[in-house]
Length: 273
Image 1 (cartoon, helix red, strand yellow):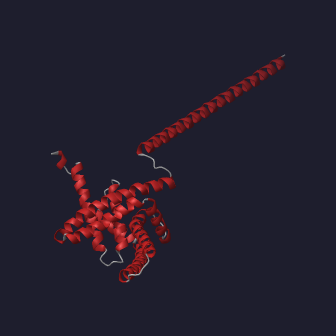
Image 2 (cartoon, helix red, strand yellow):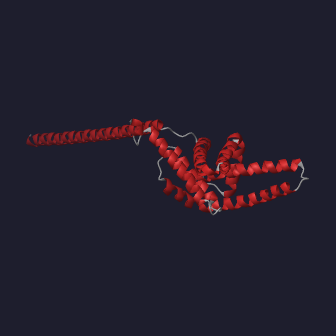
């Protein structure tokens, strides 16, 4: 059957699902030292967004390449986030142990905690797509998360859900995590691609389609051919003018020589007389 061919839509979808699942496994394995968590997530989204754009990279090779290229910046970001999470974790622990904490303080802490989660969710895909300084990356991640708040909250829930569900159904934990993590990576990478492309269009202008590029190339080629034809015509005209001038000079020289010969004959006739 045609849909079982290696280049059919079904087999391509299965291959992409396998690539995204393998990306999640690589990300978890490379995040075991904890401080490499940021580099792993950045590399995961770097390759996932390439796959969703229709490119066909070597998944493992591209993952470790992105892991290495962004490691220093991701290490800084991960270290800062670990400190922030430790601070907020201590605050929540104090609230849990204490019973006389004002509701306003709890609400403010909850808002700041959500902001940190939004930054964590958005900053690593941004680093995977754009080149920016660490402070700028934190600021842009927060702005991006606030602008797309409902979808970002959904993305965070999709990232956390497989771990929570896997704890409840521990027997099938690995299979549940693998499937839900694949779905989360698929939808989140599409979400980031869509809005990152819009950001690039605002900054650099709309992207040109392939048809527009082909038309521009065709117009440029036609203009080049017209310029070539015009230059050839100009050269031909100059050659013709040069030939005409040479013919004119030759005719003038012949007339002058004929006049000189006529003058010489007249002079001879006068001498004979």
